Amino acid sequence: MTRPASLARGLADLISSAGGTPYLFPAIEIEPLAVTLPPGHLDMAVFISPTAVRQGLKHFNNAGMVAALSAGTRRELERNGVKNVIAAEGGDSEALLTLPELRDVKGLRVAIFRGEGGREVLAQGLRDRGACVEYVECYRRVRPRSDPAPLLAAWRRGALHAVTVSSAEGLRNLFAMLEGGPLAALPLFVPHERVAAEARRLGAREALLAGPGDDEMAAALVAYFGRHD
Image 1 (cartoon, rainbow, N blue to C red):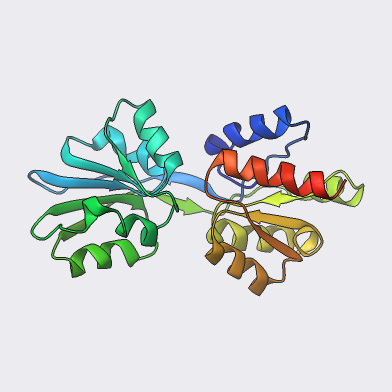
Image 2 (image 1 turned 90 degrees about the vertical axis):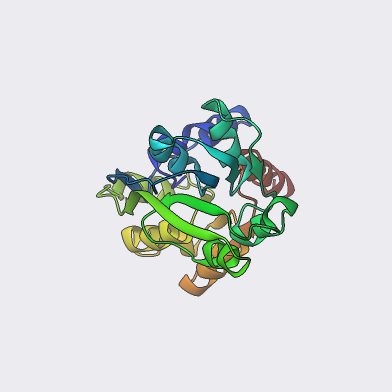
C-alpha cells in the first residue's frame, strides 16, 4: 500500500479482514500549505481528495453547494459534518462534470480545494460553462525518504504478492524509490485508467483497474487472488 500514511488505515483494515497482510509503504507525504480563501460568497466548493478535506475544510466558511471528486472524498466531508454533498461515481474530473448539478454554472463562483498543481480538466470544464473558478491549494505532495529495504526484502522472500497505488504521482515516486523491482514482477492495482496507462508506460507487469474507493480496491484484491488460488 503506497498511500500517505494518514489515508492508508481503512484499506489496510479491509485487507486484514480478508485474511491478507498489508505492508504500508507511503510513496507520497503531505505538507500543509498556507491557505488564502477567495473573498466573498462562494456558490460552490469542490474538494478533490480526502486530503483536501483534511487540509482545507478547517479554512472553509460556507458555500451554496459542496461537491466531491469521489465517494471517498464525500465520506470524509460527511464525517466532518458537511451534508448534502454531491459526488461523482467515477472518481475523476470527467465524471464530476457529467453531474446535472454542474451543467448550469454560468456566473457561479467556484473554489476548488486541492493539492499544489494537478490536472486542469475540472476547472477548465467549469470555466467553459461560464463559472468563475479559483483554486485553494492547501497542501503539496512530496516524495518520502522511506527506506525501501524492508519492502524489497519481503518481496524477495515471497511475502509480497501485490501492490496498490492511489495516484500516478505516487506510482512514479514508487518506481523511483524501488528502481522498478517488485513493480515489474507483481500485479499492480490502480484506481483509474490513466494510472493504469502510466503503470504500463513505466513497465509494470500487470496493471489492474480496481476503482477509487477502499471497498473497491479490497474487493478487486479478493477477486484476483480468489481466481489465482
